[in-house]
Length: 83
Image (tube, rainbow, N blue to C red; front, side, top):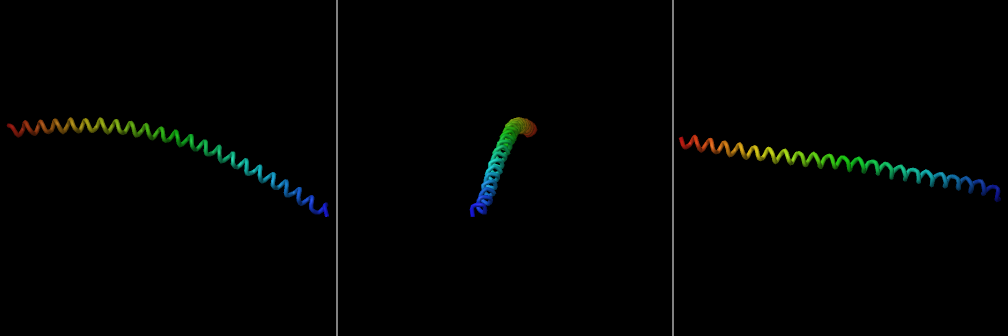
């Protein structure tokens, strides 16, 4: 009876070992892929934050220009109304 069971048990052992190894390799691949993705996302976030900061500075500069032009317009209108 032993010669019937041992080959099956040995085959199952090989299958289990190969499956475990494949799962470990998949886990390492997933971890490596996630690490690369996280690094790329962190870089993209840094780029977007820099763009946002630059945009905010441009908006602030334009707001100052608009305020200055509105003040000039108000002065011009006041002078014209006085004449």
